[in-house]
Amino acid sequence: MKKILIGIFLLFSISLSAQSRGVTETDDKINDLIFSGKWLQAKSLIEQQIQMNPDHPKYYFMKAYMYYLSRYFTDTGMTRDSTINVVHYYSRMTINKAEQMEQTEEIKFYTGCAYGYLARAHGMRQEWWSAYWAANSCENHLEEVIEEDPEFYDAYFELGVINYYPSVAVTGFTSFLAWLGGMSGDRALGLKYLNEVAKYGRLFKAEALVALGIIYNNFENDLTVSRDYYSRLLEIHPENNLAGVQIQRINFTLLIDEKGVDYFTQNFETLKDEYNIDDPTDLNILGYYLMNRQRLDDALAIFLFNIELYPDVANCYDSLAECYMNRNENDKAIKYYKIAYEKLPADTTANEEFKEFLKTNIQDRLDELGSQISS
Image (tube, rainbow, N blue to C red; front, side, top):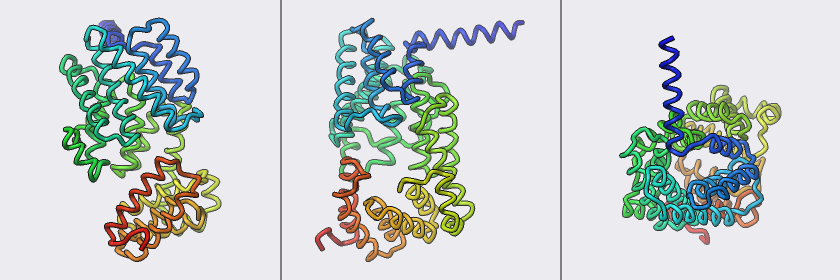
């Protein structure tokens, strides 16, 4: 009986702690709707909360959060630019509302989170200096929160993002700006913070699992760990389509890693149906996985197969060129980077943001190889 009473007390304490930090069952419901792709229902519930308490910053932040995340899980019908504008607007609205209130731990938390999403909006616009300024403000607010309460685990999420991504994904001049802005990052600390949220967070637990799934797939190159995070996400939100698709892609990649590229080419039609291979991204992921393991011959075979399947997709040629570059076959790398550049304008599979990214990347790589688009 004593153990039962202690257990009840601990559960009550955890619940009370979460409530005191402003996380409610309504917030859990909003999260479930967002991660299940039901963004219109989430939007309606958030707007109800705003009407009930129009001066509190919390649900203005939740609206920015919802618009930013929903694009991953469903088709909102909004353009990329419209999404950025909405995220920017409600992040600023959160900050403005928070400035009018007493600076409690909860208010500082939502202010810091809003600055984090404001930084993302600026980053999506490639407004790097503004992004680093907002990230710095985010960091200042959230560090105050965890100084007051080190077990406020949701406050570690944006700090994890701020530390991890600049350390692994920011290069060139933007890296210099990050250094100037004090945002050069700390990879190990970022991973530590994100894992803390994935284990103990509430509001941002699911987003931390998504972030870690992406990180271990794209940057840490450990697909089994990535799959574990996506599986944990599905346990919380069984209707999350992103996790389901990523797990299927990872299972396919690991299968070919085990059985070999010859098995893939000989059984392609069967595998295509079994693993729903209907997108150039599926084979691109496999190619990079093999290339990162220095299996360059196997990676080359996959990239060549991909351009046969998708001859009009610029990114397929860009990936093939990178493989040739890694093989020190620079003449072929130059050839395929130029083809990728030529394919970009008519490529209907890429949005304008990705096209601009590829264009810049191709120009940078050709500079490294001593060539230019026109030569």
